[in-house]
Image 1: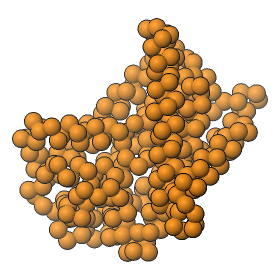
Image 2: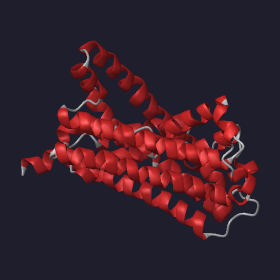
Image 3: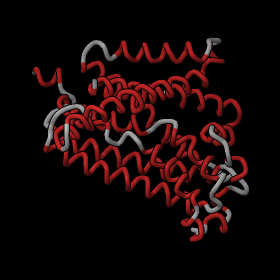
Length: 303
């Protein structure tokens, strides 16, 4: 009975992985890639590579975490495998850049999306969002687990709605996938620096696949459930990311996406009109709370 109140199952651990991975990157990266790469086929290959890299990382962490079962992520791994000083440095990087800065960035994004609807300043919305989520996680792990599962479920549902709409609605005239020239792989692109920069964007979008490793002590039977959470969450997100990019490219021409950061908003407006686009944009911003929730839960274990 005590374990049920203080431990989480693999589904909740996988939800933490999914919530960490599905953030602003998947909704913004495509527009930046299209500014420097001419062929959509190359861009889609980069998303496949990003998923493969994330999956390799998940396999590695699953193996290490089952051999060194303790919360803390890289801080614990580097301290045990190499030297405590390396773990100490890694811990500070995780606390400041990996979590605190990422939480602040997500909160600022929420503020920029919904401040006008609420009549508040963006910074006020950001601060309230962080304080609210921190308060939710201040009681017990059962409440944290329920809160995280609900938010992550809603986030995945929104992504599935966007994917389904992108494939079921009529394709936009002159969309990026309808141009055979743009779908060529473009072998000359692989020698260009732009492809390396675009891959960095993709790797950033896939970051968060290691989230469950920070909570090893709090997972029931981590030897079995932690690998399931890391691999299951990473595989699910990789599939969703690739399909979402296909849906975006099917519903918008290249010139409307190129250089745009708010790709999700642009495509949503094309599919659902101005009102529907604003609603989807509001939902995207609101569900960033799931990412903040996961990072507050996970990041505090490093400290």
